[in-house]
Amino acid sequence: MKRIPKVLIIDDQDALREIIAKRLKRNGYEVIQTGTAAEGLAYIKDILFDTILLDIKLPDGDGLKLLPQIKELQPDLQVVMLTGHGTIESAIDAMKLGAYDYLTKPCNLSELELTLQKALEKRELLLENTGLRQVVRRQASGFTLIAKSPKMLEVLELTRKVAQTDASILIQGESGVGKDLVAQAIHAWSARSNRPYIPLNAGAIPEPLMESELFGHEKGAFTGAGAQKIGLVEMADQGTLFLDEIGDMPLSLQVKLLRFLESGEFRRVGDTRLRRVNIRVIAATNRNLHEEIKEERFRQDFYYRLNGVTLGVPSLRERSEDILPLAEYFLEKANKEELSTKPSVLAPETKKSLLAYDYPGNVRELSHLIKRGQILASDGVINPSDIWPEKVEVNLKPSKALDPINELNSIAQSDNLLKLEEVERLYILATLEKLNGNKPLAANLLGISLRNLYRKLQSYDKD
Image (cartoon, rainbow, N blue to C red; front, side, top):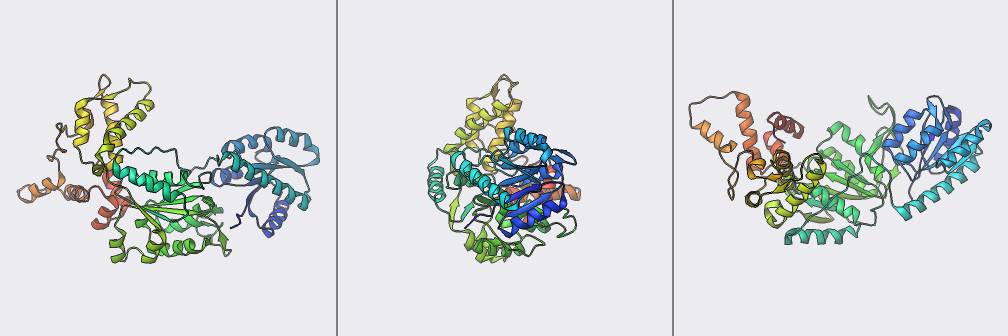
């Protein structure tokens, strides 16, 4: 599938911008235009472009000063300067700063297109030789996968195999097991590794904004849409789109995303033009999607479209061989972050207590425990009391003295009366305890939104 090149025009002459934009659009370019340096820079921070037409003189800035900022944000981006006859020397200076070429105004449109084509060819060559290095705010950070247990080694072996295909992947597992890291590994080991990796948490974006976030929108498409916006599917073109918490996606959007996955075609909100991209989709969930389908909260056809290959990531309690290697990794990371303090080590008793714990929050919880221990440790040694807020003894499971389930049972059998908000707190914590920390499922059973649940847990000083 031929990729549509994206061009940004930054020039304060409205008529010239319109003429260039119309010509480029007719010939298959995706064009965004603006008349100010500030708005142009905002676009560059959010969108991957292939080329930029940049005027040297702008009402709110100097193109020569803007050029280094552009190259810092997107190093491989090819910039063609637009200049009047009196500023050709400045254009030559711009080329020394990294511009690809310059054109004098008024532009010969045929010459302009030829220059853009050559700029695109240079960019493609750079991408092939050095990989995609653009700074994208949504780009995933570096990752490390640690596995010693047979179960996790089997997952990694399967991950390497499926990475070599373009099949859709569904990653399943409890909250905190590292599904996002597995998704990043699939992208890194795939042929798309030098292209964008764009993550989206389907449970963290309000339903009215989800379609715009995925597919983008045109200026004025709805109240508050003051500018055109490129959606995540366009940002992920030729790369990978990671849909986390896919079980939380509204049914209405599942239909639209299903159509997109089947054809690679979509429309921005408020636009009639059909657009095409080529992306690989990886989805993840901690829900039982078969149960969600039975309850008519998840579409069966959408499930089969996502489920090209299923990867199940085991919980941490199912791979105890990974606990200490992960703990040492997190501790090394914490020590590096706290350079002003003496590096900490785990006491033998602490290692035993870590192995004895069942980790309802999985790897994420282990990371938090180690970070807490590193902060509270005295004399550089992390003892069990530095990690466990309940001061659990070695080789024991976490103390049940503060178990919300036991507390609720005790209250039911006593004459003590509690305020309604305290009963609510205990009931929410007890529900999470029974569900092993599965927050999306707990929110669904409690009849509240996931965002509302997180707010309540924050007020309880729980994360």
